[in-house]
Image (cartoon, rainbow, N blue to C red):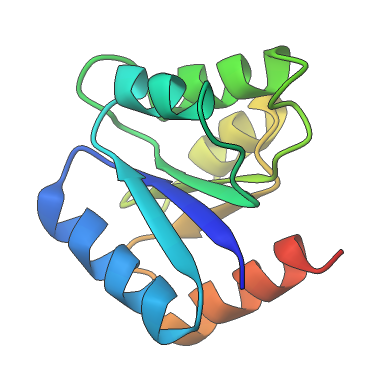
Length: 121
């Protein structure tokens, strides 16, 4: 079982991702903003982080950069989610340090595979 942090400012998306992770046998925690995510990361160390590309206060890319810039969180795999299908968006996410970019809505089988790949130690 992995501890997964989902960061998104859309409550429906957070609820859907949480339920999907739980169905797959994992524990989910959520943050609805950039700042909420950083606050949680001061208390917990998840096995995997999924963040939306477009957060209300700051971008998901800023969050990825902050996570990768901190020694306490730099080793946590980060996956960026976005409704934008543009290749340039995926390139920006990966250049910031994200390991993968998934287009929303994410299929359960895709989520399962990504969790398996990035939480297998």
